[in-house]
Length: 184
Image (cartoon, rainbow, N blue to C red; front, side, top):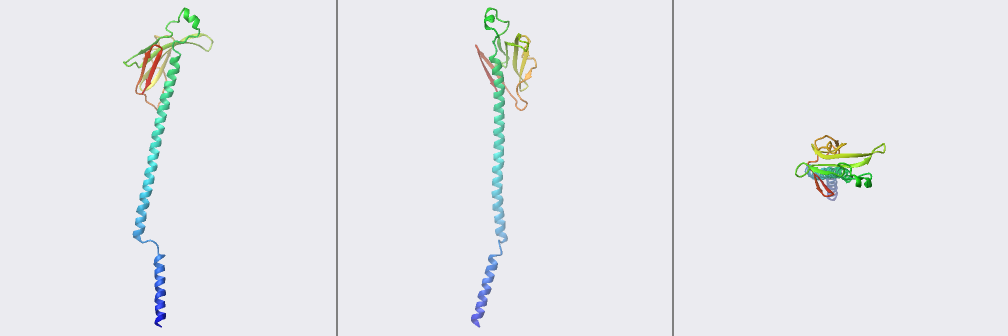
């Protein structure tokens, strides 16, 4: 009989041990797991937010660089036409009035450039075009006129730069036929 009771007690012990093992986490273990999980999720969220901010800054820097390059390219392509004539042989005999004039004014440093060139209009006629490029309220403007006197740095013109970018400074340095343009 004692052997049987011992077996029962041993059997009861086994059942109690297996119930305790299958009961799950205690409250303390669950709270620790929850805190560790929150720390991991918080670190992942901080990493994602940091990556989004970095991506936005990269996109803004790229957009700014592209805008400045595009504005500088428009200015450079048009200024390259300065001093240009349709018929160089005829212009060598009698140079057209004010064609080839490149005048940087304002400043120092110069913040406006005035110039002229010849081109052919839609009807096939040779015409003189005079331009002024200036910075007006953080936007680059190009003024087009029929005479160099009318292409002034005080006249409103067509805006070359977009509304998303504010250009704070634009300078021109003329050295012979070379014109350096600096945009900030």
